[in-house]
Image (cartoon, rainbow, N blue to C red; front, top):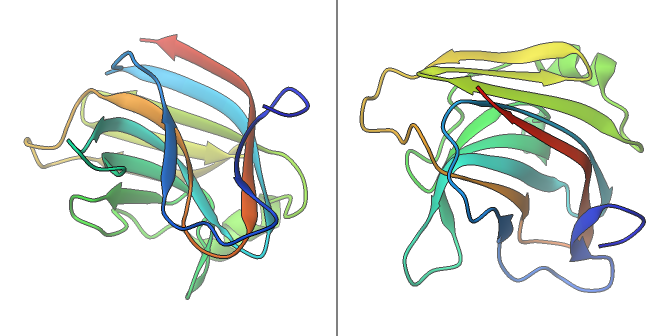
Length: 165
């Protein structure tokens, strides 16, 4: 914890593996609001939800609201299926997200999950409106703050509010 925020990663050395700070309680239908920002050479983190820890492993499996970039550009507000399908579940408009993104500062996220409907907003702009059609995908799970493996970087999270629906 630093300056009222949960901070994952470090600015001094490579991050050897993905790390997750997770709730103990499982959540199903909710609205999650928080502020997040990235710093450093690494540019990948995210907010896991409806996720589960993989037994005897450091990874989790479930949905991730992405932050940062990939080879195609910014992925802020994308929804990725971590350790399950291993792909983006939607392809939001990267340019529209860039227009509302504060690259160096705090960004507001709203993640809403209700039944099979998942929505994500970045700084008031809806990036995801997804209907899950796979009945085997988790409808409940833990919520985790992630920092991705790679170059020195930090993911900062603060002002976290969770309302169960």
